[in-house]
Image (tube, rainbow, N blue to C red; front, side, top):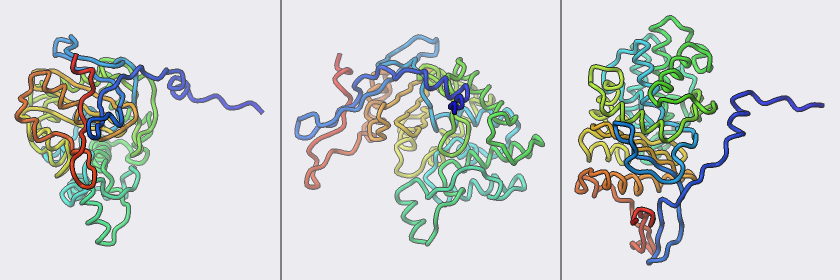
Length: 335
């Protein structure tokens, strides 16, 4: 019996070769390099010229949750009109604190909806402290607690605003998702190389680090009265809504005025600077601990105030409860 052909977008993804990643972060223990995280990166100036790169930043990859600010721009295009704090939550991978859960519920309430309208997966709160508190209260996985609930609440809200069906809002050919796809293409300056489904259920488009850096530079430099600028301003004004207390993305935006930041599962870190520079980092093994050491090093080399970045150093490698090593940018950055 013949094997059914894979959908076109899946076949396209299967034909994409693995990128030529390079060492980006070293883990040391008493001076010996114990582990190495490989990856790729690019820092792109506002004029389109490359300020710094490593690995293969033009290779397609799935940006995961770093797409959320771009998705939020599409939602504003579609008529989303909510307070800035809730707009920041729309672009968030939140920790699941009460303020995050209440915010997602409020977006739904404002549009006559309940949690039953959500199509995202169920989960426990993402933040460690938030998850422990949630479990102590006897709660289990829910859609509101899941870290993408702000985005999904706003997606359902936009369906109400436009008279689109809420049911099926995650289908790739739903008018909402077509608008999202077109907006991401516009902001990145490139067509998606492949399409899949993200962990929360939304369509997921493959783009290059180059394209994502371009998009974040555009968002960070945009005038506040534009859709791009509205998203960036909301995220920078309410960084605790974009991630949460104790999260490095929130700390980074607080440390550097005007900086825009968003992480993504599988080792993604995106940054936009007010001068239009965009930075995109991908850790090839998906190691979350390696995102910030390389990001901080690149920001230093881009001239971002070193003092403001000192508080963002990665936690030390411990031995017997005492510091015996560190996560540091790899030797490629010493050249």
